[in-house]
Image 1 (tube, rainbow, N blue to C red):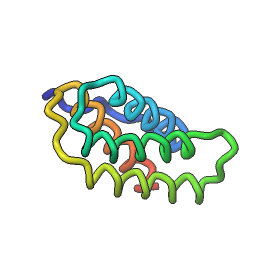
Image 2: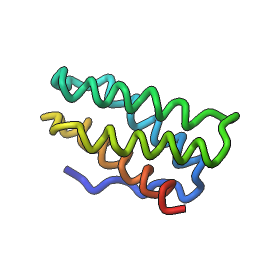
Image 3: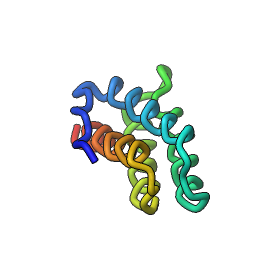
Image 4: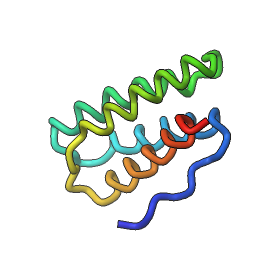
Length: 97
């Protein structure tokens, strides 16, 4: 697996990238148990990427996403794993601010 791409440094851009990476996992063949966690993470990430969200709420949503990603097992799909690693890096950018 390649190292994840460098996430955007701006929290709003990192939120957009987070949502995009999790959306991309939906197109991959992932075991149902793992897909459940990723699907929920994707929904919360889409909310965090909303233009109308305030920074405090965005941070709370991203904390939820990080927790959901921590529960997800290995996918068995290299591309999905790369998107998940990139999503985790995006979470870290937002939570470190």
